[in-house]
Image 1 (cartoon, helix red, strand yellow):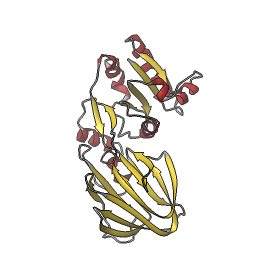
Image 2 (cartoon, helix red, strand yellow; image 1 turned 90 degrees about the vertical axis):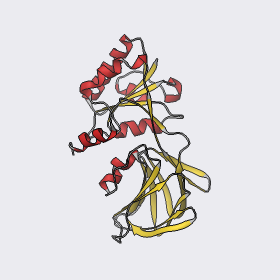
Image 3 (cartoon, rainbow, N blue to C red; image 1 turned 90 degrees about the horizontal axis):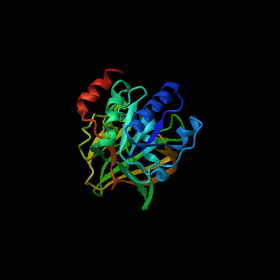
Length: 270
């Protein structure tokens, strides 16, 4: 089995633990590679995701490390996250029990799918998000105007500091902090959460991914689109964005943990 290791490089302890993982996997007969950024931190030569063509990626870090890894994939590769961040909703393993689980990884594993969303304008792909896409003003303290169109019907118009377009997976991230609900990741839906809306009647919406969904930005103020906190695109002040379920979901190694049990334990850390 070929495995690609990705580590948070600003933590000495995370890098040391990544080396422990490498040792355990090589003892089990796995071929272990580093991505380029991680390898550089170790003074070694790494490779791109396409060059490695791994069967699984193990990411040691927080949610940002995992999201950055997924954004670099040309096609979905199963990811196993070891939490070395603050809360780490995407990281299913804690360091204390990670090595025991990882030791058995070369003998096989099951995979859990997580829905992603694609965002496009005039049939041009802007990006694909696992957690969320954020439309936010490029100028602080300036509001934006939004219209939400569902199946060709205007569903809501509002003014706000921004808009979060979240997947169920992302409902425990920025969307939760903005007042959105926690959504079961098995639900195929798209969560819209206004950021600091001008009217209190502007509430979060959970919309079936089977519907035709568009978000129209029409404002005198320029805006940015930020995808999973990793990619920023300038939108200008007027644009219609089509939002739909991505053809290919993200893949995670299934560690057989109940989602709601995990959320309960993670939230107790906040």
